[in-house]
Length: 317
Ligand SMILES: C[S@@+](CC[C@H](N)C(=O)[O-])C[C@H]1O[C@@H](n2cnc3c(N)ncnc32)[C@H](O)[C@@H]1O
Image (cartoon, rainbow, N blue to C red):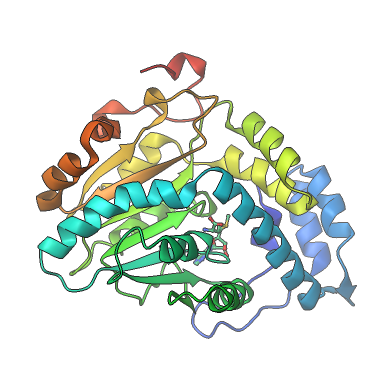
């Protein structure tokens, strides 16, 4: 039975024009019912509709509310600091390789929390250009509005993760990979293996057996929106295992690919998010040196297990 997130079903946009597709409420409900998501069915049943269609303005307000709550989770998990820790050595190495001012593109940026926080901290240096991309135009507009309010120079544009037109020194994402079916992941990573790109850092939920329970507790404690609570748990259930991610990322053949602190290396009670990292082979040694002791967390394909099969016995250093 597929695990579905409500947010993937209530909004759809043409990947090229960005035009909104109408969403038929009873079709969303039917898909959730078929997947056995009874709570999700009740959540969508309560959503306003005009005739057969979900009310677009209400859906947009809901997206922004849920993503605002999601930003708070990102703050609690110190996501911007975690990104900076890995990006700083890669940015420094790329700068020395002389590829011009570094450009970081945050794919599936939502309301742009990570991009805005990196811009506000200046942790990567003043010459770094930061761009957020998302296929949801309402979230892109909200990200741009917040950046303006906060006096930041980062930019936000609408775009699809599978048709990225924004060139980047480094591509990043947070909480996005589980939205993509396993069979499409290789294409996602391969598209980032392009001239001028030094690497990628894609954080997502670690697929431990305890992840859905952890997500339930965490989202219930921290989120008020029923949709956010539902999708938070669904995200943990559909998170890709370490091996799936590494196999897919390895199809970007110009990159050396690692998981940073994969399941085997972490305490499953704490390990909520961990990234798959790709870098050009010539940057690896410098990145390792810059990371110091933390470089031991970079693990290649031979050192990981499959994911949801890992339980507490996979813990320990
Ligand atoms: C769980 S949210 C994470 C948002 C943000 N990265 C964060 O950490 O708060 C997933 C995001 O991915 C975006 N997304 C999903 N599929 C996408 C695609 N194919 N192209 C671009 N964005 C996508 C959604 O619109 C949503 O903003």
